[in-house]
Amino acid sequence: MSKFKKKKGGDLPAISTASLPDIVFMLLFFFMVATVMRDSTLMVVNKLPAADQIQKLDKKDRVMYIYAGKPSSRYEDKYGSSARIQLNDKFATVNEVGAFILAERASKRQELQNVLTTAMKVDSETKMGLIQDIKQELRKVSALKINYTTRVGDYTQNLN
Image 1: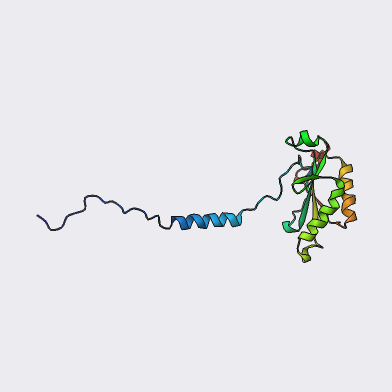
Image 2: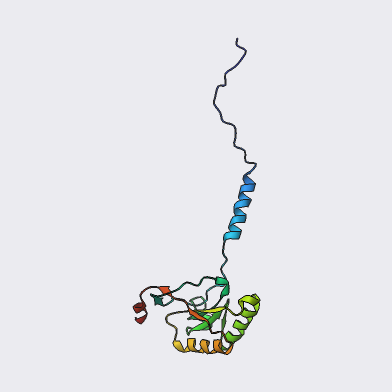
């Protein structure tokens, strides 16, 4: 008889799962910090016109968005099929645009209030009369920096 016995199998020890909750919470925290939440739910059809010479806006915190277009199919029964204005998460009239701009300005820091840009995301099927009315309201509240949001493409696609 021998004093020492040989191990019969080369079994590996079980993997320790003690640090697994730490890893899960670290990943959860990372994705919570890195994820950008959507500002508003789009309630209008928004097929942007094409343009070949565009510039990207650098700082999103300096932009106020105005959406215009026909209500999407979900809201068509309630609001009809004519072009509407959307400010944040609600439909609005042209007269409410000025108050919206003033409220957005007031919610920003003091140093950003003079450099805010109004971005208009307008559907390509929207009539120019509505856009002109919005621009008149923007002039009344001295929101003179206007950006027309487009998609990259050939501008001749807009003529169809």
